[in-house]
Each structure stands twice: as structure tokens, then as C-alpha cells.
Amino acid sequence: MMSSLLTKRDFTIWIAGLLALLLNAPFSSAAEHAYQPRTLATVDRDISALGLQDCQSIQALDEVRHLAVCRLADAKAASDLYLFLIDARQTGKQAVLFRSGDFGDAYYVKVAVFSKAQGKGPEFILAESGAESSYGIQVYALDGMQVQRVGAIAEVLNEDGEARSVLPALQIQGHDQTVVFSFTNHVMVPDRQGHYAEIAPEQIRYILDGPKLRRVTGHSRKTR
Amino acid sequence: MGEVTWPLEQNVIRGNKINHTFGMVRTNADGTPKPHQGWDFKAAVGTSAYAIADGKIEFVKDSGAYGKQVCLSFTWKNQQTLYAFYAHMNTIQVTQGQQVTMNTVLGTTGKSGNAQNLPASEDHLHFEIRTKANAGLGLTDRLSPIKVFGKCPLSVVQNGNEIITF
Image (cartoon, rainbow over all chains, first blue to last red; front, side):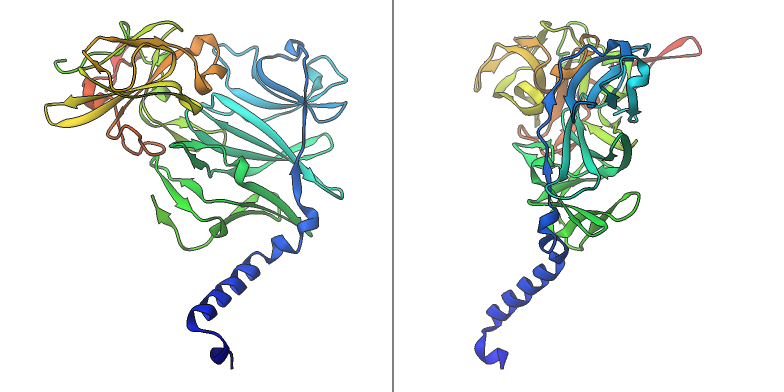
């Protein structure tokens, strides 16, 4: 019956559309749980008493919690960069509530915080780092005064011939006990030999349904 | 060296660390290796940078992670066209299409682009050898500069002896 109503091409498109709908069902049915980037106020304060220096950013999550990207003051050589959660009410080293692992050879770390537009639940701190090219994003769950690293997103965008932050193409959506990190555009996947392959947005996502992010990919991949 | 010369008067790898040479020598926050597309030569802001060979200025740009950039095309071993790429510059004294000779001052080193975030002790010239002027991401379309220079100005001390690494 259907074949009499639809051409073969129409049928193919219809099947492809149905598959896309099914694959994206967890996202579209949970639109009310979309995470949005928060606007963070820049904080102008001296935190050298906390043992930190060369801060690239200090931002206020609220009146009591500050996020900072700094180097350690007591390092012998130029320290690597770290992400800190700071209790703004305290002044000594005890004010540091969380210190990330070092960001290796990164020249910069840029921090964004995503929270649910509605409802309660952990927020996500996304720390994008890099040097001449983006190294991807470290993902942390923030729940009150607690920060826990949940994983990393290695993908980058190919813009103007440079590997740049994937953040502009990242969307985060919650669905029951699952949070899905997906992309709105083609992204570049790094390999361990220093090269990149392009992957379509529907072929990759990260799922947080436990303590760590899981990377889930499809099958088709095009080498560029 | 013959066809090429060094880009600075004093050519030392930044911090004398292998992390600032070519290849998968960089480390990410989670410990995964990351590419470094060229060599970082230690250079205070304002240091003169020179053309490493006779050639043509393919482009001059000021954008993105590299900041102020110069790309010089030159003929390598009388057969292959390669591109010397200088980044994080402070000033650029040449223009696109200009023919230059070896040792022409291209400009001065700086900390433009993402190098602006580094402490002064890490000031450097980011220098690449490319096989295409507009190279791909990561190590794509790039060679280790050691292919052109024949040696790497990186020394390490082991058991009290300085060893030049290649």
C-alpha cells in the first residue's frame, strides 16, 4: 500500500527520518531538561593568600563560591594551570574547596558552567584548555560545594584551519537519570598520532548515567 | 647549513624541554598526548625573527590561537617547496607576496594569540615547517623542523654530561 503512495526515494527519506527520530528520542523528549550556560560575574580579588598566582580567571558562581583558573605560587618552576573552587567567605588556604589535576601543557583554560533551565540537580563545569590548538574539554559535576571530575570530551571544531573549542557546538540535555552531551555540528576527533577525523553530530555523543562520561559513537566516519 | 639558517640569533628550545619540540610531545589534563606542530624557541618579546631562506611571503595573518603569523615559502634542496611558519609574533615587517632573502628581518617575536596567557618566563617563537601554507589540524601537512635544520637545539643533562638530542 505504502509503495503505491510513495516513490522509492520518498520511502528512503521517510525511513531515514524515522531512524533519526528514534536515535534522537532521548533528546527531544527531554527538552524541558536542557542545560543552559550560566553567565558568571568576573571577580576582582587578590587570592595570593590562598597560594595561587597568575590567575587567568576568577568568576563567581554565587556569593560564596568562586571558580578560579590559576597557577600555584609555591611551584619551583612555572606551574601548570589548575581549576579551583573557592569558598569566598574564607581567606586562607582552607578557602580552596577543590583543586583539579593540572592542565598539562595548556596555555589557557576557559571555564563555562551549565545548569538546568528548570529543576534541581548538579551543574556542570566545562573547562576547555589548549595551546596552539584546543585540547578539548574536561567535565566536572558541581553539586553544592562538591566538585567531581566525570570525564573529558576530546572533540574540537575545525575553524579557519585551527582546532578550536567545541563548546559553541555542544548541547547538554537531561533525561531522567541520564545526561547527554551531544553536538550540533560536525566535529573533529583527534587520534594518538596527531591527526583528526571528522564525525557527523548524529554519530557521536557522551552519556553520563553513572560516575563517568561514556563516549558513544556510530559507525560511519569520514577521514579528512 | 647551506640552504637555510636559523630563525633567531640565539636558538634554544623553550625551557630545554622536549614538550616544546615537534610531535606528540604535549600532555593534556587527563594525561593523553597532544600534538605540538613545531618547535618553540625561547625568545623574549621583541626579539628579531629572520627568514630562514630566500623565498616569498605567502601570507601574513593576525587571528586565532597563533596570533600574528608569517608564512614564508622556500625551495628545499632545489626540488620541494616548504613553508616556514612563525607565530605569536609581536610585530611583522613584511607583506604578503614580498620576496625576501635569507636573514631578512620578518618582524619581532611576541606573545600574541593564545601565548598571551603564558608567564614571561615562557615567552617564545612558535616555529613550524609545513608542506602546505594552509596546513590541516594537528600534525597534518607539517614536518619536524629537524628535517630541515638537521639537528634540534635541545640539550639534556644526564649524569653531569650535556647531551644534544636529535
